Amino acid sequence: MIDRAEVWLVIALLALGSFGLRFVFIGLVGDRPLPEWLLRHLRYTAVAVLPGLVAPLVMWPAATGGNLDAPRFAAALATVAAGGADSQRTVLDRRRRGEPLSGALPDRIGAARTLSHAP
Figure 1 (tube, rainbow, N blue to C red):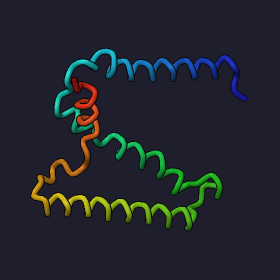
Figure 2 (figure 1 turned 135 degrees about the vertical axis):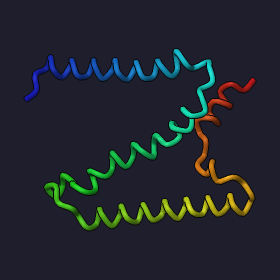
Figure 3 (figure 1 turned 45 degrees about the vertical axis):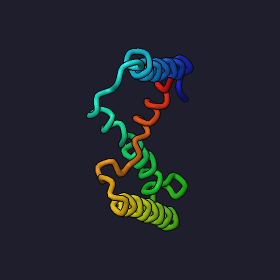
């Protein structure tokens, strides 16, 4: 069993880390425009984090003692196929309309920044 003091220390450190990360973006940089290169990298944060969270659950599920489970793996493959088909459809739609492909993913950060600074 974990000592109570150790649990509270971990909770306090995680809270400080979470506050610190949010303060950097909201408190220090919130009223200034972010550089384009940073916005481009932040666009892919969810795409990078979600597979890192889901992959261990699919490949080594605790419910099967860490052994690969065929139904979970099939569901993961179906999800990847559906996402790939949707991405391909988005790219084809943009080509048909004559739009550039460099912004095929939605710029949610830029859209949110534009909406937040609207008069």
